[in-house]
Length: 174
Image (cartoon, rainbow, N blue to C red):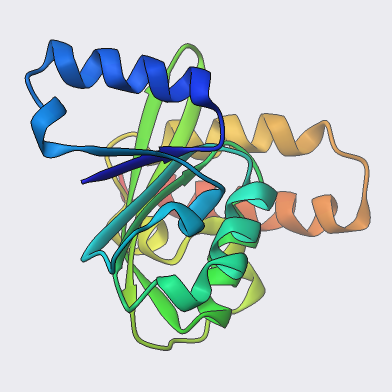
């Protein structure tokens, strides 16, 4: 595997973790900006732990290095932007999982090469989340409703309506 970060300090933490788990001989550690750190094509690429804007920029700047790899992504913010970027790069979302830690929810998604079109509602709510309805999906929706209520924009009002509709739909099934 290639482990890359723009921060040498963060890579040192990664190096220690790899050593701790006996994986250092299986990793090529690179200081680099996004996908530019890849030395050869990859079958799978994971980009995690940053905002959606940054993650989308990494995908856009490195699109020539994706080579149809399977993507595993998790953005702390702006997940609809990440989904839209994937769609624009001819990727479709095959799986979305919800993780809950320290009072926050995170969505981890898997995407594969192959074009598909999503509408604005699916980009916001998550096409696979709506379809699979994970066990903690209602709690995630309730959390998103609370977060979205704090935003005071026209877009947030539309998104809040989608969230409330989805929460009501899911609640009626359980």
